[in-house]
Image (cartoon, rainbow, N blue to C red; front, top):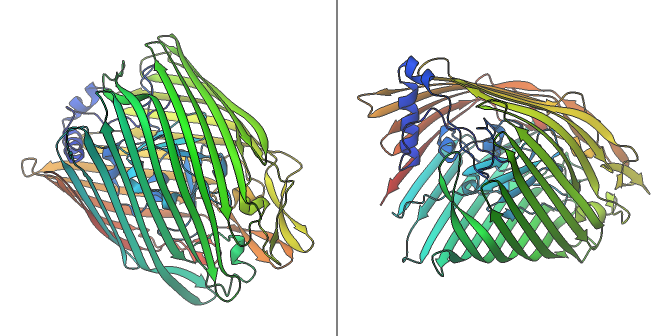
Length: 636
């Protein structure tokens, strides 16, 4: 996997803490101009030592989290190149991500080596992802894969950090993380996120409706050292989100959305136990030492619940999916090649008053090989075989080759085929008068060809990619006996996508970032493209300097985002939904960050032009809003 992180800014020595790195950033930005230009921008390879060149901006590293005052994970994703985010509302409400122009349901998400389970409608709800899992985001050029990683400091000292964000509509967000050594063999790493709001706002006619939002997200990772390189690993994750008018027109809200007082509640609970043999891995390019599993055997249980309630229509509808699974993974690393293989078995047990499916089994095996043909040429191949008791066997894979014609430059080409199986609420959901199931529904597939380049020289770095996508067997809505039904489209959907990003350091203390991504033409009005902006453009400027003999570091950030028009359905009983094109608009934000020792204080004004747009019909995006927050890290 040619997976990479965002390059570090022109750096000094590696700091002991994230905040020290932030202060070093400010010092570097305040350095003399000629010093800034002498060194090329440093980059870090996350997943492979075989890359032929030092790649450029494709993600962000842990220290960049404190560059943003954010309230949930979708805000982090929205700041990354190649990403388009769809929401149905404000903080904590349903959000999906499209990477490199792929439909959201074809963008896979994985954290700490575990696949994030999709919802009953095939959706990936970013609002349910604990923020700690987004410490490091790894993106794989040429594929639709996003890998999240929680990064605990390798230092053996106890470590704690606290974050607090205060926002509009009585928003309160608090994050606490700590690492402790209970003994020489036991080192737990724990994270707790709490969020709530009293005023998620929805506009219906001339009425402004609001409702509470609450979330609790926990993540625990504990290793017990059986020997120097063998460990017993336990992971626990619990995330509960509940919001009023929070669903993207799940069909449980129908038929009368205007008079709906529905709310949506989602739970994700994980218990995982693994035995893993790990080894220190020294990267041949960056000289960094990291830890990787040479093999891992793991069993896990997911409890996934999605609940909609509308007391005036459908009452309480709760879908439950209990997943019991196991994986075995093996990896082999050498200087010029690497191999890895993984096998997985899962059983999904469904409980629902409307879903007629009881249980399904899933078996999956995959292999990945990477070969360094030459110091300037690397190839990567990935093959996956899945067998589902409902949808049969599916073969997917990808291939990628990267060439470095010069230092700091990389050109790559990639091709991939991925599948998305229907969710149980799409093929086996019976909502009287609204939706009926379709046992003949088949898996959709996406073929993708991509070419791209990445270049870094002196104080400029740039990346660009162009891809062609073919969506087959995609899901569309049809009328069956006066009710809606999901069916496979008879024709393919062909379209082009693109992504461009750049970073420029024009003078000491100044940084300019630009990114643009989306589709080159207007996509068809099909289910997979609802709520997703066709294009997203971002421009950001950041200036920082040190004051009072470097005791105080100040950073000022000004950013603008243009969200393109997006499709939103207008439902009517007994008929296909009509499609309304919601207008796009420009959002401008400003932020000031004060860094003193191990604390950061934020002040941020969002959408200060007070642009009024809708996430979905009758649900507005956030208007002008003031937020502030604090980030405090300490070793104790």
